[in-house]
Length: 207
Image 1: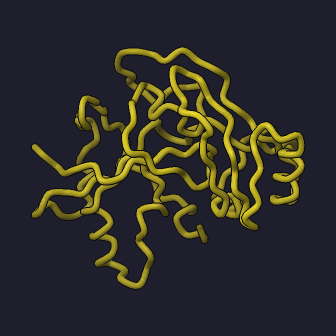
Image 2: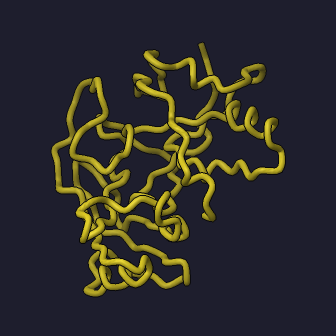
Image 3: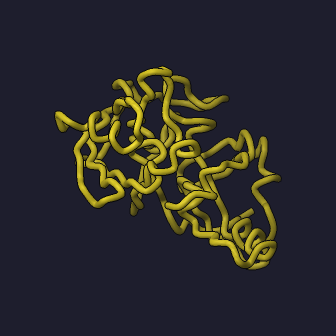
């Protein structure tokens, strides 16, 4: 059954920051190469900082200087809410992020890894994903939610999908909820749908 057409592809270089839209991509067992390749760590708590608790991160944007491939995670340039740019290799990058979030933090890069082949039954370990390595969203679901609350802003970017699919005419409702356990084919890639995306506070914050 044809569901629709991929209209947007997104990669998020730094966890919780705004992503970059791609014209094309490859997909491995760890998702799109470079997706969540960097994250910010709370130095005191020794855990990752999430945009749901620190929404200023979602007013930042990050882009790779080179294309990630085969486990290689390049440096990124981050635009802070005041428009200033800071690179992941800048000597004061941790100090500037600490000032932004008003707590001691440090930028953390995923270690290099060898791209794996074959199918994965669960999301890969050793990543910065909260739930799964690929997030798919459809226009049918956005339209269903828009009908329930027309006053809200249902911009695709609020939901941070990797693939935004424009559904075929006549397909309506929250169709992704019926995909659990099913195989979704996107180009030459087969995705096993493991779990519906849970409600997340990040969509409510200014971005």
